[in-house]
Length: 619
Image (cartoon, rainbow, N blue to C red):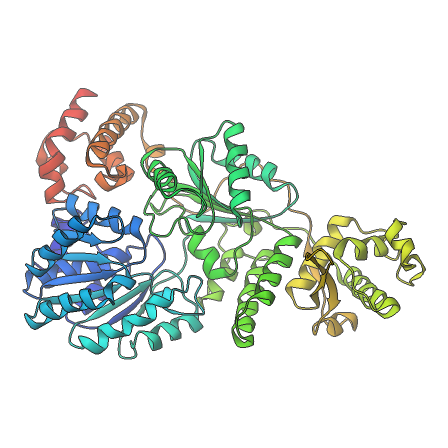
């Protein structure tokens, strides 16, 4: 069956998106490929359709390498719903169940088998692949989340390095490596580590135009988050990312206290609690998951309407990957982040204290600097974000800076006064001090500590009394971000330590006035709800009339019942957009259902009669 027919008959879609067809034709023909495609761009079809086509052509089974148990479960469930023979091997299976899957693999009964990288490279699994290869029954290797192979990527996993054995051992089997996030350095590392030098590269646009990017100055982050959710997304599913387990627990509890449905997710929870919370997030509506960055990879939930960061990620790749979990259905979504001086300090410290070599630390500092520049930007966020991945673009009209251009003030004078003070306190005593003390000197505050060290006698004491604390914090944040100020760790007798400020390489240019320091006015307050520019789609149900809404609600109720029976997320049965189109068309026969996006032959056979019954009951 040609790929176009597979797309229509099995998956229920009429047309490929973007470069999907070129990728699928290339891989179906036996070529290697490296695919960079944004989250929600349809990466899975780029290996699922060649897998089906190559199996039908007699080439056997496709092995999908993935580190994500949640993705394996959902994708195998979705393939079963579409009538495709698929299975997974992972730690969630009993030994008996795993053995049964292995027997099906060796009998050639599977079109796709999902497995984790550490399993794929075991002698037992390789022996099974050898048996398939000897019979010419290895169709394709699909390596998902390929950025995990690179030490420069945001989610390095050493076990991915061993995947070179696939090319060395089975050179005649085509490979497709896929990722949603990789800058030029990471991309080159993927090519080298996976020996994909001869592979054709397909790089899609990184733009997610349906996502609105907003970054606010962090003042009272929890209150700011609550205002954002209450004003923009009161009943929507969302993900809130925090850096620590404690912060996850506290934030989730506060959201519950505020009347929201919220669950925590982090590695410190018992595995069964973590799994239950994830299942509820996937299967129920309107839940806000508060999580560490461990949550979300492999989650295909299409109707996540917002992703919020209460703590800054490590780099733009991480930020892009995490925000990309919003709006996978193409409808309007938000990426919101609160960002402050302490975020800069924490991220700098983690890099400086890591046991990695200096070359690695330098690369990580450069990646952090790019994220800091995005956070401090006064121009279009999307232009900055896409520019990081080497993609030119025009101002988007759908980020905070485009929608409400910030007021910019010249902080060069304040920056020079802060730098001079940092220099003078060290010159006077040989000691370094933290941000609060330095700002107290500049603002002329007669604290006990200022008097104790005689810093009220410094020439810079009180020179910045006209600047607010918020303004000086903004200046220090940018000085840290641009490398004009560094951090010096001071050890205490009790074993603890604290960070102090010191001049860094970039300070000289600022002190001489060669580099201006331009800053935005405070953006801590959450804006009122803003209309979106452009043609960003609304969530499916918002486009329906009153009578159509009744059908849509009835269809969603029916879908929820079916999903519970099958132990699958509701969107695996039918996406919201498919239900909305059914409600709009009000089909009277199975023929009327054909051609609705998302209804393939197997789903038409399995659910067509029930869908017609639900529609007729709503008339």
